Image 1 (cartoon, helix red, strand yellow):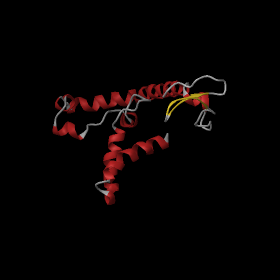
Image 2 (tube, one colour):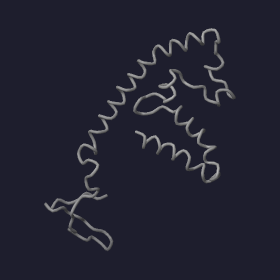
Image 3 (cartoon, one colour):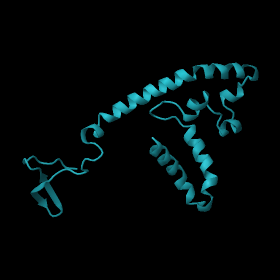
Image 4 (cartoon, one colour):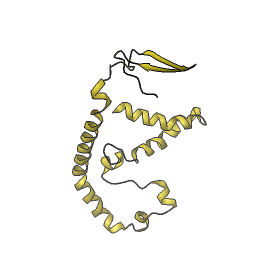
Length: 149
C-alpha cells in the first residue's frame, strides 16, 4: 500500500519538477492535498474523509462558491460535524469491506494464476510460416498457432 501511495505522489510531483527542480518540496503540499482529497477506487472514499469524518472544502470552492459553501449554516455546522464523527466508524468499516472486495476481485486475475515470481514470458514458440519478409506465424510446442497480436 505504501508503495502505491508513494507512486501516486511521485506521479504528481514529476510534472512539476520539470519547471521547478529546486523547489520540489514547495510543490509537495499541493500534490499531497490532491491525493488526500481524491476518492480512492478501492475504498470509495477520500483519505481526508476517512481521517476527519467530513469532506474538505477545496480552494476552488472558496473562489467559485459551491452549494455547500453558499448554504453554510454556522449554527448547524457543529451539529453536522458531530453527526459525521458519530458515523465515521461506520464509514471506515464500509471502506474496509469495499477494500477487501476490491482486493479479492483483483486477485482472481493475473496474480492468482501466475504470481509475482512467475516468468513474464510464454513459450517457447517455433516459426510455423513466413507469409512475407518480416511477418511470422508462430506455434507452440503442441502445434497450436499463436493468435496474431
